[in-house]
Length: 287
Image (cartoon, rainbow, N blue to C red):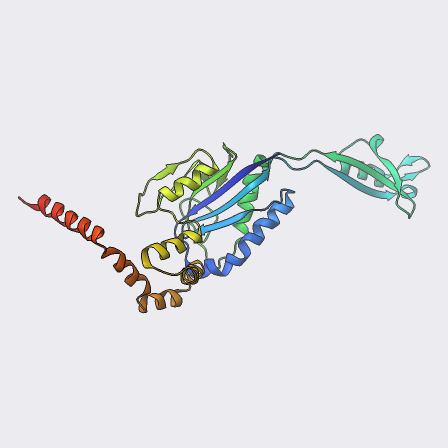
């Protein structure tokens, strides 16, 4: 059985250069942790200057049950005069069972001690806390910092954590920050957090709170506000995504972005609104 899984790690604004150096490794490192925990699945990774987001549409709610086979010493070493030696007793202790539960098997080189165990998979929500903490500690940004009473360090202070499996909040903690069903709006919209109920609700409310999570949104803004062609908007998107300031500055120098916006502002309906705003401001300042 699967459920959608959302993981958001909110931070203070990430410095561009060290973040972009580590960016190619982020998805690889998270994939490795999923593999180690037998929870590998497809996922999408998104980021903004103040958040890292992992979105899994079909995440297993528990690990698959597995069968573990363990081989021990050859029988001629495990038993002397039909009595178990230290090798046999040690193998049973290693397997965590009584010696009577240990059998033998021939793998082509003579009989050896053998134990077969069926291991029931753990629930995902029990594993996610350690998985996220291990992932964060695996990231290498070069210099890091400490804040508050935390003994450990990170590139920037962590300010929020959301791990939601389906509509269930997963209990977790990262650098003393507990997992909650809330996130930060864009600072131009609000300094307060907004609440959400489930993963789908999170994505809807991000948009309403001014956060551009998808690069396609940046393309649409460039086309709508600045009159970019689809190809030009895609080039701008790539420059923004990789924080290529020289390319973005070139767009500004050539007047593409501001000129396009000014053309939109100069439309009659916007000018009319502008006059009304000025008039209202003047009325409020009259004594």
